[in-house]
Amino acid sequence: MKKLLVTAVTLAATFITGSALATEKQAIQEKTATSPLLVMVTSDDAQVQLMSMVLTMQSAQQGAKTQVLLCGPAGDMALRDAPQSVTSSQPPKGLSAQGLMQAVMQKTNTKVEVCAVYLPGKGLDRDALIEGVGVADPADIAKLMIDKETNIVSF
Image (cartoon, rainbow, N blue to C red; front, side):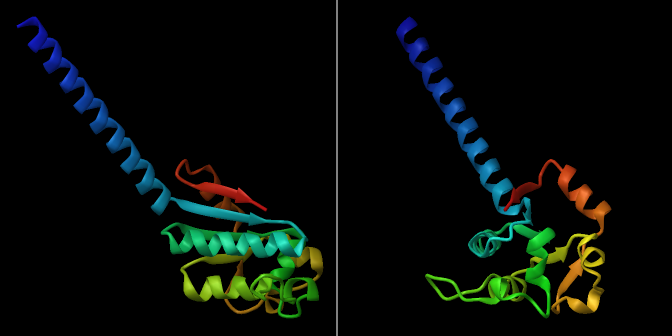
């Protein structure tokens, strides 16, 4: 009788632990697939800029609600008259950072903005930006940053 009781308790504990782990795994997968992702790009390196867009595209395609904030030299990716560093094709697929950023905006629901100080710092206005890119509101970005559900990646 005692052996039967120990076996029953062990089976119950295993079931509960297994259910708890499955529930936790499902919660992590749901959070990952639907959590906001803020991609902050500041690097002037063309490969880093391109990779930031590769990972943004992949994340959006896997269900993340993606938003990109371009600051400093990375803001050049958003310019109509962009420098060659952001428009030049790179291996292995011959993509440019700006070109892939535009594809990300067209193929996913990704919002792309330059930081609020980028244009004034360059002596430019909104007309300098390619279609679809906006200027970030610092209050909106701060709200996203402090949201516990938001994942933040910086390049």
